[in-house]
Image (cartoon, rainbow, N blue to C red):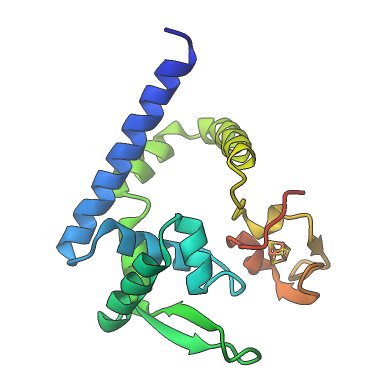
Length: 187
Ligand code: SF4
C-alpha cells in the first residue's frame, strides 16, 4: 500500500459521513441531499452566481434535476425567483429567511464544525493543503474553481469598505469578497 491510499480512505470516510449527516437533516424537513446542496450553495454564492445554470455547474447535476429541485424549494418556501433588472431572461434564485435558516443548520454538519474547532491552530495548515489538493483536482478535471471572490485575479482592493471587480467593472462591498463566484479566476 502506498501513502496515498490511507489518505484516500480517510477522504472517502469523511465525505460519506458528511453526506449522511446532511441527509439526516434533510429527512427532518422532507428534503433530499441535493435540495440541501442547492440551498447551501445559494447561501454562499454571490449575485453573479445565483442562477439555475450556475447551480447546475457547481453541483455537477443535470439541468432537469436542478429545475425540479428549484421548483420544489420554491413551493416549500425556501427560495424565490427574481428577474434580473437588466436581462429579463435571467432569473436569480434568492433564499428566503426560511432557506437561510436551514442552510445554517444543515451544512456544515454540527459534528464537522465541532471537530474542526477542536483542531484549533491546525486548521490553517489543513486549509492550505486541502485548497492545494482541490485546485489540482479542478485543473486536471477542467472544472470551474468556484473560489472565494477575494482570492480572484480580478479582485482589486480599493478601501477598507470596498473593492473593484476588474471583470464586471463594478465597485462592491468588502463582505462580497467572502462569497463564492462562478467567474472566479485563480490569482
Ligand atoms: S473579483 Fe472575481 S470572484 Fe470577485 S466578483 Fe469579480 S470575477 Fe467574481
